[in-house]
Image 1 (tube, one colour):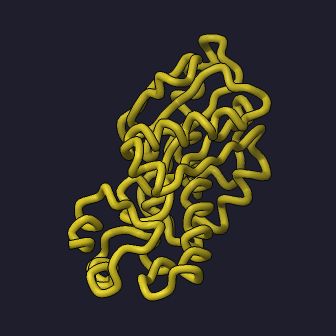
Image 2: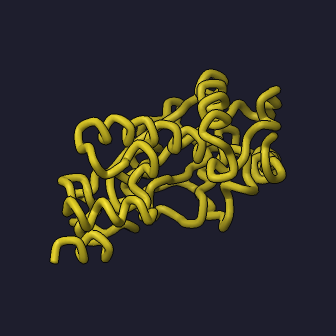
Length: 209
């Protein structure tokens, strides 16, 4: 059973009525993680589309791993375009998480072909992108294309964290995906930070002392 109410295409329909045809939803995952990259996805759904899987879409945090794994390939199959980008923990330490998040979003949008006419972004605007846009607080729960982007980004980043768990064993990255769980913090203090831990984040700095 899928938790929560499905997001709607109300924002997309309003923009279509205003003359915008290609509308990209954008979201990030991994912003609060202590390890690994921040990831962003951008998804353009066909204008006015209504897919059988739309009722399964939610903010990625409301879905189980299996539900995300099931719906993500359907989104990628039926979308007009999908862009995905990640910014490393090293770059996060250099520029800060907010700027790194915007960079990942910018790079994800740059991958889209065709180029969108309008951007719907979860929670923020990205001034670096020179095109019409709207930041929507809680957009991943309200807006269909943003929720689709959240799922695509989450699945891709989770896959990477499973791979990084093999490269940096002992931290449990495959389980918690780098977030600050009790288990992760215990491993972090026992082993010290790995090369993919964000040393600018307070819990990681504390493990360096």
